[in-house]
Image (tube, rainbow, N blue to C red):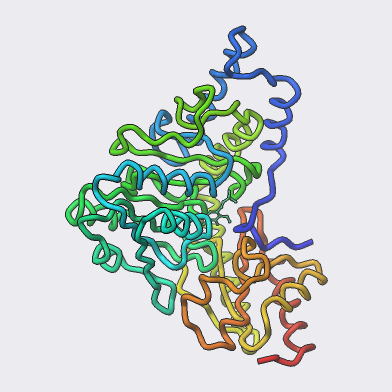
Length: 375
Ligand code: PLP
């Protein structure tokens, strides 16, 4: 099988699985237990927090483990709106956020918030100025993702943070950095909330983290209970998941420069090879080196994904989270119908090879040559 869908989820390296196995079978104590077997786990959990915090470049005591990126997004938005309930109930976000943000915004709208949803340009870009112009005196929260999961577009979160300080210093900034984990420094970004998820970097599914910055004085707890995560997110720590997350973070940090260079050259190679296929056109102007969005204009993407899948090649028709429904991200680009219908996303990991890209290109050529366009 050729797996080119790392933005959906990444394979777990052996070292990560081993770290988890050890915790499951040998170090299974509850970090809240009073005897040494438990308190030892508490110490280990803090060392895992430090490992993940090192990848984000943030203080460990400001990082809270969650069960996934979706949870972090929901928690951050609700905490920001709650903290700023005296400022107002206006939220600014973008039309290309992950549904974890957009659906949470819809809920907040039902609860009385007003949401401004910014449209991207045809390349998928949104400028800092566009975001700042939408901010009002009653804007409680701004939520702009760092890297778009379908297009690989990188948004100017640090510029937004700087601009907010002048435009409305009370507004809290959240960024969904799930697709950017390992490429940024939370300190340099300047956002008040940063969401990340383990399974996009080779950690297990079911683990994530939320950075909550110092401007959020008394963060609204997500779960009340036994006081875990400094009383903000109760529930017995998912120690094996967290151990796996920490190991994946260590590996990412260790190999960061090498992986980035490899991915950049692979991205350039794949783009060139794909665009040599007749009727293939680029989609968006994403610069994240692990995500590449293109369209076989006129050939419906769901058919492409099914046919390539049958040929043993895994790519995505937009975000895997949309499960066959047309993607709101692609819709927001307002592309010609033929182009919008044929969008596929290839996404790479540190181990992806040019030979795998070649096999995908061949499968796409076979698809192009054996089917008539439907649009
Ligand atoms: N945000 C973005 C940008 C994503 O790509 C994803 C997952 O695809 C999520 C949030 C949700 O993360 P999780 O699957 O950990 O809930």
